[in-house]
Amino acid sequence: MKKVFAAITGVEAYVPADVLTNADLEKMVDTTDEWIVTRTGIKERHILREPGKGSSDLAVPAVKKLLEKTGTSPDEVDLLICASATHDHDFPATANIISDKVGVKNAYSFDISAACSGFIFMLTVASKFIETGTAKKVICVGADKMSAITDYTDRSTCPLFGDASGVVLLEPSEEYGIQDHILGVDGAGRHHLYLKAGGSVRPASHETVDAREHFIYQEGQIVFKVAVQKMADVSVEMMKKHHLTPEDLTWLVPHQANLRIIEAVARRMGISRDQVMINIEKYGNTTTATIPLCLRDYESQLKKGDKLILSAFGGGYTWGALYLTWAYDPDKVV
Ligand code: ACO
Image (tube, rainbow, N blue to C red; front, side, top):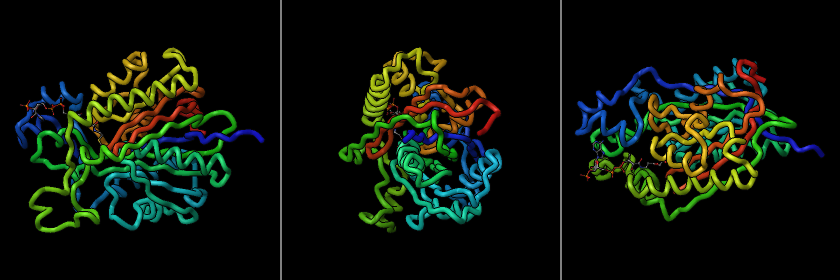
């Protein structure tokens, strides 16, 4: 039997209109534009300020645009998955809410939680439904309203994060698509980057709110070192596994947490900066949305057959890489 690959046949994204610049942050905490740009590469990020709106509201415009762009009717979608670190609610799944809001009625849907590696984990899971013939059209949504869990009095974390969504359509292909994945986790790292309260271990209380435990807690330096090591190791391992030289690879699509991490990973892979998708300066770290947001921004430069490695690291710890071949030429959505 011929092997079936899960190919990305369309990509879209959405960022809210409100921009929070480094100059704005200078007025809020003891920081400077120079520190933020030098240490992270971030110049601005977009924030969803409208009260009563969550990650699903970031996802909906992107999913609607994707359906229109790929000529897909909501009725044709078999499966919708959402990866997020900022689900609308603990339950029901944000994927269910997105499905309802975009009119996807004949599909099942569920959420995936793997922090900043969520998009890679989600694509891996989704590809299995396509490869086995269980689903023909799968929508994968990375959506994160990071501003909801960012402490804007904490200068060590508030410059890092932004709000966005990114979405892809996966369909079967005989030639192009996801060729391989390598995923990893180390739960021992969970104490260095997490939300202390709000879950079943430490439910919300006056005490947890007063202690600001509903905001991101991160030991930046510790996480930085592991992020570089794991993202570089997994990306190099993928190159070796598929005998890819730096010249063979068209693009590295890295999770955008810190420009210094991205540059270190590219150096370890032996590739040039021209081969790396980078847009962190405009959006900051939008968690599960960074990789599809890069694909959307670079879509016009992508050509059928291009060889891409997608690579990420996040809280958990979680990390992973995907090797895929691009399925369509610019302006020719399949
Ligand atoms: N402005 C000015 N000074 C600052 C700021 C700021 N915004 N933030 C921290 N500083 C100070 C610190 O207080 C410290 O001062 P000191 O030396 O007097 O103590 C100094 O700058 C250096 O601080 P570090 O934390 O060592 O700075 P570092 O170079 O490590 O950069 C950063 C911090 C950007 C957080 C980096 O460690 C990082 O990117 N970490 C990894 C992030 C990541 O990949 N996370 C995983 C994905 S996210 C997810 O899964 C949700």
